[in-house]
Length: 517
View 1 (tube, rainbow, N blue to C red):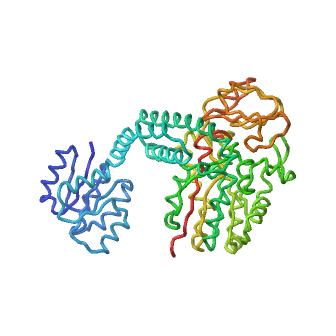
View 2: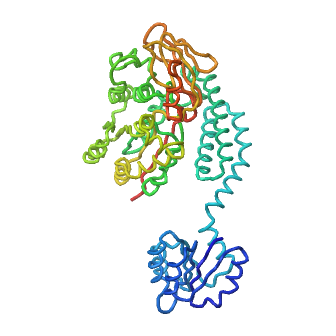
View 3: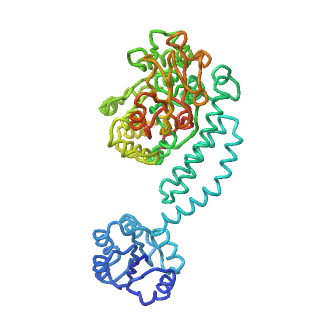
């Protein structure tokens, strides 16, 4: 039973209100002064306190901080006859839960109690009911989706429900949502398989913006329209992670564009990010700039020349922006950029590549404590939000807002939690990625993968004449038959990328305008 303490020097006049609350199942204690209220709050753990502001001896505003010292988490509703703004300011500044002006009616008090005591339960129940009602509509959308825009709308809706239901205690409804996400992903994979080659090789109105067209289609137009633009490319950044941090940016930015683009295959940094900055598919990069492209089986860093690629693409497109380029890999790099932020201010177009989330994702595989902290998508979002709140990146974004920069936030690909092992046989030259493989002697079940025996068909380079590519679907990951059980235990439920899923291929593209200072 919910216990309430009502403090008012005219408590005798409130008997109808108290009787009303008791008929609703609440246990209500009363007192008529601040001193008794402090003693009673000390002796008993109340779920909510209703406190009159005007009382003789010790006022409500004087009593409030004393109660907060004793019970810092107990919500306090302030009741007053005064409508003076300074009293309201003091009450709100003391972190009251609600503010009611006398005379109050019983239903008004009941509403405030429900809002402050039962809100989580009520919101959860209503959210669950709303999703049950929406389930059929989403299923219908999945069955009718025939364009990338349709799938973006479905993915956005599923992410919203995942976030809404993340705090629900109803495990059954979470399982229903997980099932619906899996079924949607299965259909999305079929959709990609049917259309991917035509997207890569033929441009028409049904072809989505993709990694290699992102700069000229989406980014350069924003730079052309704004005096100062910063592109923030966060490696391995999913839409649900964007949703977890965007509220923190509201004091500094207005969201002008909240959209998506399609990452190319493989959804891996060396392919997708190089394609973004070069404005070319990997095969074209390899042919035009063979010195700057390394295949999977070649030693060396695969993303060393992004600035070179960007410079060439700007020249090709006739863009003469003053630009800066920074890649932040180590923690100290963010602080260094803050110390040298003037060159970002001076640039027409500044690019910041931020690798932390990709590092975190891979650390989850390698580090037991990180694995425990990010056991599912909700936990991963929470960790993302916590990191961002205390990061140099957040500081940089606030500084850019103050200097009037338009900011584009996007990524090269997303990531997905893998759960289902798929056996593949390959030789020592086969690439090591868990969501895609490339090599000469791959042995696999054709029904379980998206296989490309001629890499040039999807504009990918070959390390040998007989090389092929295979891509994992949904939450699958590739394992070798040798020592399979140990491999499965190590990688199952880790976040990986490189394959085909909504989480990896449907990438957020956000444009933020600075708030007017």
